[in-house]
Length: 135
Ligand code: CMP
Image (cartoon, rainbow, N blue to C red; front, side):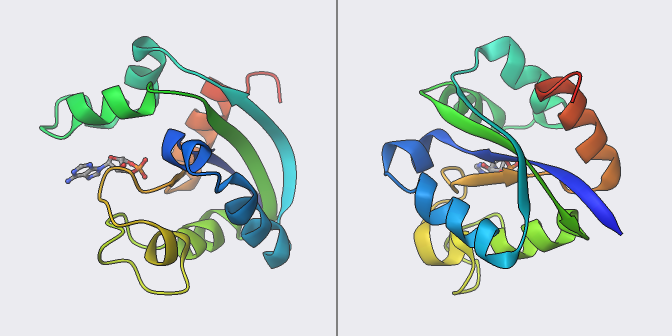
């Protein structure tokens, strides 16, 4: 089934000049870019995006990181796009993610892990409405 999923190329991806590298993996897979925008978010937007994590111990440094500079927000579309993008990204912790995945190849961190992607149809709908209202 064709799906849309929401993806962030996080501030570490922009700082490290890896936007093209990561985007090209999604494009090479056959996913379509439906929307894409570079922006810098504030703490309030971070709190909304990461609503399910705001009480976690790891949240304060994550909030600092995700607001630390420009990120690229995008919407990708394709067959089973939600699971396909998560497989391309790999496990959350870059130190444990499998080689061949974005995080496995390019990240050594559990926080600065280059990408975010919606983890379910419900979170995709919520995140798309938050980041790209009217799409
Ligand atoms: P993301 O897919 O954006 O969803 C939540 C984010 O929190 C995750 O990627 C990581 O950037 C970060 N994260 C999750 N778990 C931890 C952790 N244990 N320590 C630090 N950061 C974490």
